[in-house]
Image (cartoon, rainbow, N blue to C red; front, top):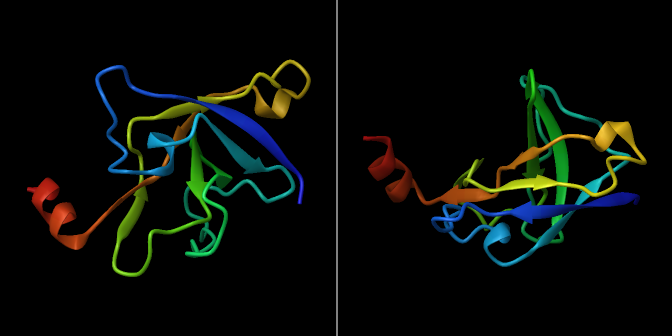
Length: 119
């Protein structure tokens, strides 16, 4: 499995990932040989035993690129969703396919929290 490393950039006013992996890690791995998913594609189902730092790319349109985790916190959670953290790579000069900024979708919420925030 080929991967490349991206570096995490957190919001200066605090962590909004609700305990997502970016609240603990400064870098993530992105699967280099996985397909780039579109906005309407079915994404891989996150699994509880996948590595915490492993993500796939999703192009949501225009300049909006997302990183989607392959690990889930377990059954019953809603997500993943954007938690305010961005990622980029220092490899962009060597590989134009990685010359972008990604929105890290590592936030998961319980149904109670999700419903509270939806109102």
